[in-house]
Amino acid sequence: MKNRYLYSFRILLILTDILLVNSSFFIAYNVAVHLKMNFNFEYNFNLLLNINLFWIFSSSILRLYGVKSIRSLEQLYRASWKSTALHMIFFMLYLIINLNNSIPRSLLFLFYFVLCFGILASRFLCTVLDPYLRERYQVRKIVAVMGMNDTGNRLANYFQKNQSTYRFEGFLNSENPLFVDVFGKIMPGTCEQIKQAAARGIQEVYVSLTPQRLGEAIYLLNEAEKQCIRLKFVPDFTETLINPFRINFMESFPIITLRTEPLENANNGFKKRVFDILFSGFIIVFVLAWLFPLIALLIKMESKGPVLFRQLRSGRNNENFWCYKFRSMRINSDCDSKQTGKGDSRITTIGRILRRTSVDEFPQFFNVLMGNMSIVGPRPHMLKHTEQYSAIIDKYMVRHYLKPGITGWAQVNGYRGETHTKELMEQRVNHDIWYLENWSLMLDVKIIFQTIINMVNGDENAY
Image 1 (cartoon, rainbow, N blue to C red):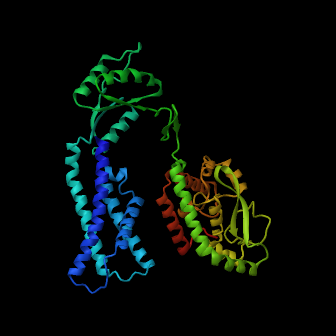
Image 2 (tube, helix red, strand yellow):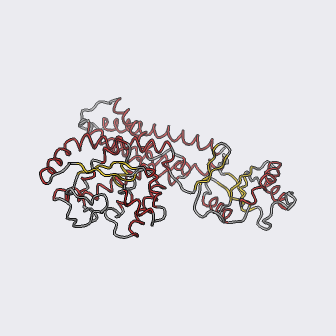
Image 3 (cartoon, rainbow, N blue to C red):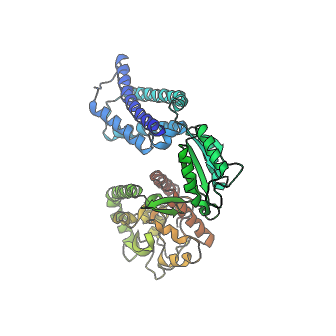
C-alpha cells in the first residue's frame, strides 16, 4: 500500500506541476493581453514546448520527483523552489542565446509570479492532505524490533526519526534476550511476544542477530509466519566491523562492502564520463583552440624546449599514464623527482603566470578526452611520490580507485601544490577518499565552480 501510495503521489505531482507550468504561462499571457501591455508577441507553441522541456530538465537534475523528495515534505519544498529557480535560469539563457527580445519583462514577471504562487499553493495542499492520506491509506508501516543490542537500538532510533513512514511499536523482547534454547526450540516467551505483536497489528518485525546467532533465524521465521508477520533480519556486526558497510548479493552469495563507492555504479560512471567528454570538448574547441597557439608562442619566445611538458604519473588502479601540461620550467633533470616549491628557480616568467592562474593544467583536458583523467578527481602524483607516500601513509592507494582529476575536493579545500609534511599529504588523501565515498554530479559542478573562483581570486598555494 505504501509503494502504491508513493507511486500514485509521484505521478499526480508530475502531472499537476506540468499543468501548473502551462496554465501559469497561459494566465500570464492573457492577463498581459487584457491589461493591454505594450508588446508585440504572439502565443508561440515552440516557446511553450521549451518551457515544458526546461521544467522536466530542471526537476530531473534536482530530483524533485525522486524518492527522498516524495517521502519528505521538507525535501519536497526545497527541491520545488530550487527547480523553479533553475527553470528561470535555463529559460533566461535560452532567450539570451536566441536573442529573443519580443517577450516583454512584464510577461516573464507575471509568468513566474503565477508559477511560484501555484507551486506554493500545491505544496500547501500536500501539507494539509498528506497526514490524512497517509492515515487513510495506512501508508505508515507498523514495525517493531527484536534484539536489544547496538544495531537494534540504532534501528529503533531510525524508525522514531522517520515517523512519517513508520509507526514504531517498540521492542518485543525487552526482558529476555534469548530466542531459541540449546535444543533449537523457540522459547515460549518469544512465541507469546510474536502472538501479541500480531494482535497489535504489527506488520513487520526487524530482528537484530549477531553472526553467531544467525542460525536462530529459521526458527523465528517459522513462528512469525504462523502469525502472518513478516520478519526482517538485520545482522549485528558491531562487535566485528567498525566502519559502515553495505551488503549486496552475487547470485546467492552475500557480499559485504566496507567502503561506499558511488562511481562503482555503472549509471553514475556513465554520467560522469559523458559530463567529462562534453566539458572537455567545450574547453578544447572554444578555449584551447585560440589559447594554445598564443601560449605556445610565449613559451617558445622565453626558453628553449617543447611547448608541452609530459610526465608519467599514477592513474586509476595505479596504472601509469602520460600527463600533459604547458611547460612552465626550464629544461632540467629534477622534474621527475623534485616537487615544485615556492620561488623555484626552474620556473620561467611566463611559467609563473601560467601556474599562478592554473592555465598550465589546460592540456589535461586532452587527457580527459582520451579517458585517462577526469575533470574532477584526486590530483595525479609523479611515480616517485606514489612509491614514497604509499609506504608511510595509511590508505594512500585508495585514492587510486578513481581516475585522477584536473581539479579535486582536496584542491578547493586548500590542499594543492607542494606538500611540505606528511600531515599535509594525509589531509589531501583524506579529502580524496571523502570525495570517492560521497561523489555526485552536483558535487563535481560545485568543485568546478569553486576552482574557477579560486583561479579568479588567486590561490596562495599556486606557484
